[in-house]
Length: 125
Image (cartoon, rainbow, N blue to C red; front, side, top):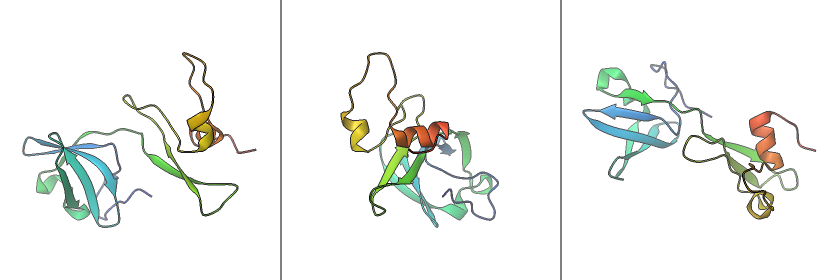
């Protein structure tokens, strides 16, 4: 779920880069109240969601369409796979055993059934 505070026109999600007073903040997580960011020097910071707007000096620099998607396991409902949709620096990946241990062909991307479900909207079989 991407949190949107009532005063926000822009949904805030991991992967975005914001700026305030020459300081760049990379969003790595969000919840109902806070945005968790990392600065350029690696310092972690937590900002209230309602403060992330232009009137408080925060400006969105870069928006990336990549994010984590939680896919429930078909074998065990308590198990959830975290799928990264991928971006220019980190390719799409999954934390399932099939993705971790499958044999790959050089120069060809490997997609497990969870990645196919999220990226290509193909159902699990």
